[in-house]
Amino acid sequence: MNKKSFSVLSMLIIAVLMAGIPAVYAQTSPGDFTNEPHKTMASAHELFLKGEINKAAEEINKAAAYVKKEADKVAKDAREGVKMAGDDLDKLGQGVKRGTVKSSDELKKTFARVNYELAKAWHKTADEAKKSGKDPINALKEAGAWIEGAARWSVTQLEEGTQTTVEAVKKVGKAAAKGAKAGAEEVEKLFKGIGEGIEDLGRKL
Image (cartoon, rainbow, N blue to C red; front, side):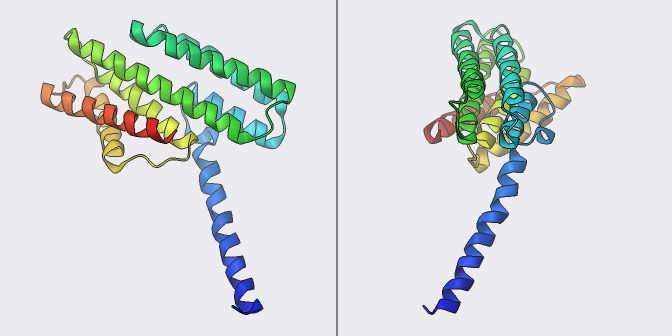
């Protein structure tokens, strides 16, 4: 390979890598999230990248408080995991404030694990609702939102089947809000799809 060809190839590689950066950044920007604590974690990440360390730490602490509140909403046997996820965020916030957290990758890894833990917790909550004869759709919708968040923070592509299930859960959730009710077979299919997605993502984190 001559120098000119090598130079052109190098420029192409750099262009491809640079093109990927905005896409990854956009996946974790506050504008991509509309609810808490997703939005607060995204804000913390953005502030950290800007070098506004104290503000980033404050946002992480806010996210930790939100996550701990989620522990009161999920199934009893899932609460401990959610509380621990909140504690992990507290530790991360302290590390950011002390300056021991040097890379935004540390934020992303922790945020991904927190989202994953909440996805598991809400899936268990859906299972509990299903077994007690209650409608599990809202819990499945929460599980779907958290698994999407975990995928974003870990820059992992959800399996096509999982993404389809997540979108289906959103649609069913909207319909349920208007009074429509999903059939038992459809609910079981959605429950299984979300569960498989959680398992698959867990192997990648």
